[in-house]
Length: 152
Image (cartoon, rainbow, N blue to C red; front, side, top):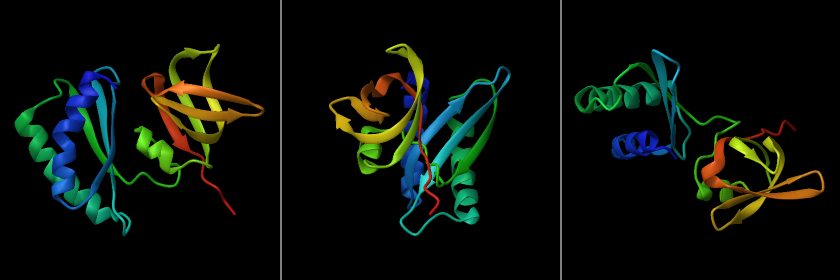
């Protein structure tokens, strides 16, 4: 995780948690002169639009005071949804047995994209089975990981 993301996570997670929600994760997508700051929130009873608005208002106030982002950006507060992004080893461990799609920051064993069965977590690696091969993907190489929703 980049130092900017760590800084934003450390600043925003306590605010989200003080409002009674779990801070599922933070994404900062730099898009030239205008960037996107996306904060995912979770609650055992689910997330409503009103919840996102409430958290967004509080986070906007903190971001205005602390000013951790020097460029123009849009703040977006969202639930993780069915194709939920995974940010931590604990989150990966909670979804063992699910299908996942993982994109790496740089190639690992000759590829950057992996889609398969989440088999487990070993130390700092995520274990993904693609066809008949198991890959141990270091968490710090993962750019984006998502659950592939099941439609039954």
